[in-house]
Length: 130
View 1 (cartoon, helix red, strand yellow):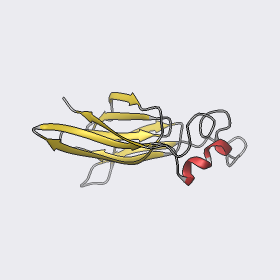
View 2: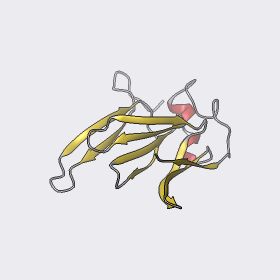
View 3: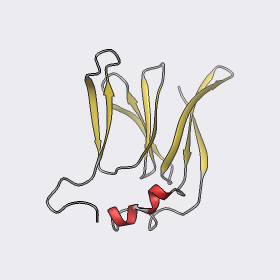
View 4: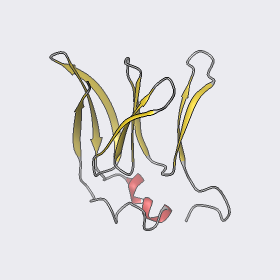
C-alpha cells in the first residue's frame, strides 16, 4: 500500500485558476486519484470523469456540480464536445484497460479496480446538452 501510516490518504483535486493572475478560483477534492482529461466549454461548463465511472458537469465559475452520470466503467480517456445539426454534444471514452487501473487494487483494496470493473472494455458515450 503506497500510503504512509498516519498520512492523509491519497486523493485528487480538480482546480480552476484565473487565466490572468493564476490564482486559484475553486477546488474540488476527490477521494480517488485517477481522473480523465478535463473539458471546459464556451458555455461555462467543466466536464471531468473519474475512475468510479462518474462523468460530472460543473459550473466553471464556482465548481458547483450541475449534473453527473455513472457509465458503469472508469473514465481514462479524453472528453470532447461537438455540434451536429445545431445540437451540442459531449462524448467521453470509458472502459478499463490501462496500466493506471492495474494498480488500483494495490492502492484501494476491496474498493474498485479489477474486482469491480471488467478488463479490456471500452466505449464512446455521448450526451446531448440542453
